[in-house]
Amino acid sequence: MTLMHISLPDIILPPHIRDFIESGPQAFASPEERVRFTIELARLNTVEKTGGPFGAAVFESRSGKLVAAGVNVVVTSSCSHAHAEMVAILLAQQKLSTYDLGLSSLPDHELVSSCEPCAMCFGAIIWSGVKKLVFGATGKTAKAAGFDEGPKPRLWIRALEQRGIEVTPRVCCKEAEAILENYAASGGLIYNARKSR
Image: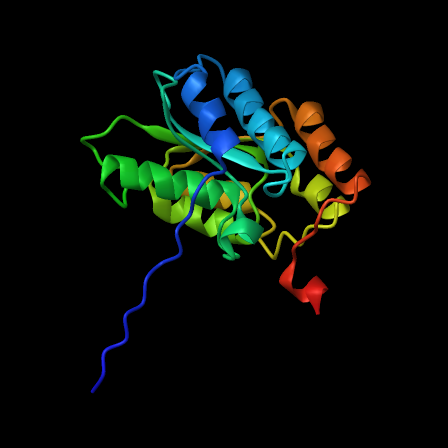
């Protein structure tokens, strides 16, 4: 029997995104500052044409310390899973050497996103160990821009809260929605697999 070597795709943040993260503040006091950080990630990603209009980051909830940040790199990584939230969670887990960001030995962590999570990211949030989700734009705005957000439970926020994950929606919502609206208006690539057929 021949063994097949399979490796996961490398998820690499674009250089200008890495530079922005490394040269900026490493702690953010308020939810608004944290969401604005993810909005700027999304904006830079679209301006430089390195991915979709989504940014996310994992923070220590109490201190506001930035643990890891991500942007949507679906197209550049050839990986449909490489949404901003998934990238931020992956990088945070790798940085902390654990699949569980909710370990009792760690400070509480939160995921902050420029947009409401899609169905896939919703599922990842549950398994990631984060204790809180904060987001800007609504899924309705992402859908209006052309993105397929997938089926989520109607009471998805309640489902997260029942699992001990606090949810703070629509923080800096108008600013976050503007990124999606501008991306759609500029003819940005909408990379839903079913639309490419």
